[in-house]
Each structure stands twice: as structure tokens, then as C-alpha cells.
Amino acid sequence: MASDDTPTRNIALLIDADNASWHAIDPVLTVLAELGTVNIRRGYGNWSKPALSGWVNMMIKHGIEPQQQFDITKGKNATDMKMTIDAMDLLFRGRVEGFGIMSSDSDFMPLATRLRQDGLPVYGFGQAKTPEGFKRACTRFIDVDQLLAAEEESRKAQAAPAPAIAEPAAEPVTPAATPSEPVVFKKPGMIDDELVKLLIDAYSAVKRDERGFVSLSAMGQLAANRSSFDVRNYGYKRLSDLIAAVSNFQTERREDGRVFVRRTR
Image 1 (cartoon, rainbow, N blue to C red):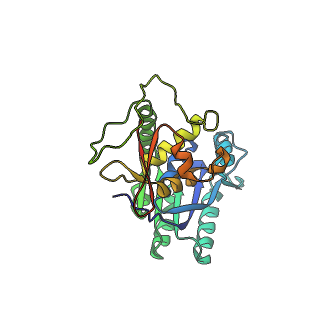
Image 2 (image 1 turned 90 degrees about the vertical axis):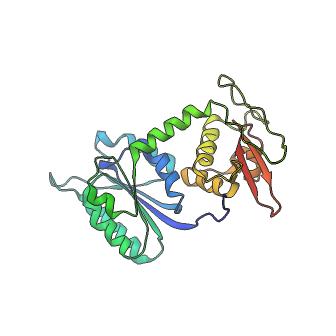
Image 3 (image 1 turned 135 degrees about the vertical axis):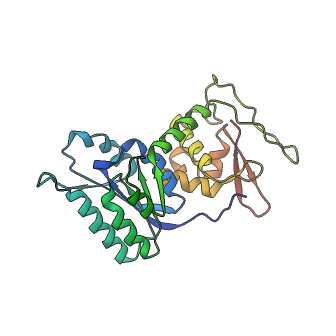
């Protein structure tokens, strides 16, 4: 059963840009919403390197604070040291309740181990080639290539109608569209395809009940964790009003007043 008890912990995401793919930042933020809200977002690297240029737009899009580290001595990685120092500072301030470390570098194994010794969850994000030591030091380690593959499958599924779900009682459901039909909104021009994708990704990441519904608040937190999402930017006062205006979803208010959402296509 979907729960309305969404986590509210303060989470820090530290990114080793030299050893992390910017393509995976969207699904990484979605996964971290399991822990809470990613209020601290920092990316570390020498931004004069052409190889890191792909991170620039992601930094702006997701409000990630760039941390410049020059390559003063060849073969020495100041980025790893700066990330570790910052993580320990955040730990001892006592305001962070969980960490995400985005890197495929085994040098962060001692850091993950130390953070966990204080009882904080540590989610690691890297490629399959990441050394086992760092993987095992994390509370959870997530293969970013698998995250990207799952997201690609989700994109493909968006064009297909959602499977029919048996109902204990008849309810009006918006008819499913064929894959070739464009997305239709009750208020044309207010909502774009990028927002629809964000909402569908958030819905897909939330645990569903036996009828395929998810908690609206949990879905909203996932969406907000991944972007500077605000319903007022689309002309609505409440998230429930915006969801009701998107033909891809059906909303249901239950006896306790909570709103639940189901994807209809």
C-alpha cells in the first residue's frame, strides 16, 4: 500500500565529476528521494577540462554548486580530498541525515565507511566497474548504467497505454490513447512534454497499492527532488489540480482526505 509518510531528511549529494556521468543525474536524484530531500548538491572537478563540459548544463538545471579543484600536481587528485573534507564537515555539523556519493572511484570507500559508522545512510552511484570495496562500504550501491537503461525503458513505455487494472467498483477512467496520439491536456499550453515526463518518472518510482494508485505527496516530493518544480509555474495553486489537468493521470481523494494518483496511459 502506498504511504503518505514521505521522508523529510536532509540529504547531501557529492559528485566526483571526473568519475561520474552527467547523463545519470536525473535518475540519481529520483533514487535519493527515497532518503529525503537533496538540499545540498555539490559537484567537484577541474571545470577547465573539456571532458567535464557536459556537467555545466546539469549544474545549472539542477542547482548543483560547482567546486573548482585545479590539477596542481599530475597524478594527484585534489577532488577526492576536497570531497572527503566537505563530507566530514557536513557530518560534524549534524544537519545532514544521509549522503549520496556519485563516483566510480574506490578512494571513497573509507569515507563511506566512516559516514555509516555514525549511523548515516550512504547511497553510492557508479558504473558496474566500480571496485567492490566502495560498493560494499555503501548502504546501497546503484549501477548508474542500469538506472539509465531503466529510464530509457520508461520513455518507451510512455507512448504505450497502461495495462487495465481490475477495480472493485466501477470508476470513470480517461480512455487510453494510441501510441501515435499526442499528449492532450485540459488546459492546452500550460503544461509541456518535459513536465509530463517528470511526473511519469515520479509516478513510476513510487510504490503503488493493489489498484495501481500512488500517494500524491510522495510523487510530488520525487518530482521536486529532481528539479525546481513548482505547480504555480503552470498556473495552479495545488499539485492535485495540476495532476487532474493532465490526461495521463487519474486522481482519487480518499476518506482520510489524502489524494492518490494512478497513471491511465
